[in-house]
Amino acid sequence: MDFLRNWVRGIAVVSVLGGAAQLILPSGSMQKYVKVVFGFIIVLQLIAPLPRFMGHEDSANSLLASTWSENFADTHSFIRTYQAQIEWQVESIAKALPGVTHAKAQVQLERVTIGAPAVKRISLELKKSSNAEPDLRALRQWLAGHFRVQEENVTVRLLQ
Image (cartoon, rainbow, N blue to C red; front, side, top):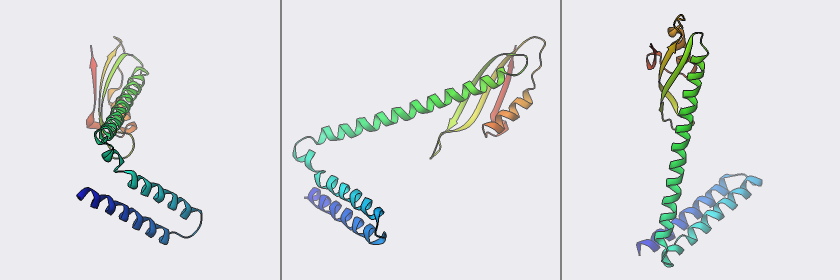
């Protein structure tokens, strides 16, 4: 019985919200779109109990769960790719310095609510040719400014 009550309540809430939106918006093309959107939502609310009555509630839930896990995997893939691109940029910048023969970067990202993750920490290991002396302090300052990281979170080590 709770299921039926929640279903009817959901239809009523969507209908009231749709009516309120139509009253608030001025007449015109925007109101047409609002009617279409709320009509679509009402139709979805009306057919929501069908999987339950047809005995397919578990398959509908598993479909939602698999969709969520695919999106979650896509997000992690994006973050790994983004991190690899930033590491490549840091290494390329370091290798462009005179006397640097090898560069290996590790970047730690910080999740943000909207947009791409922010760079939290940069660790860079460099190998240099025997007679060169790259300016590590200037490199640290430049990386901190470019990636908007506090300078104390940028580590540059020179390997022998």
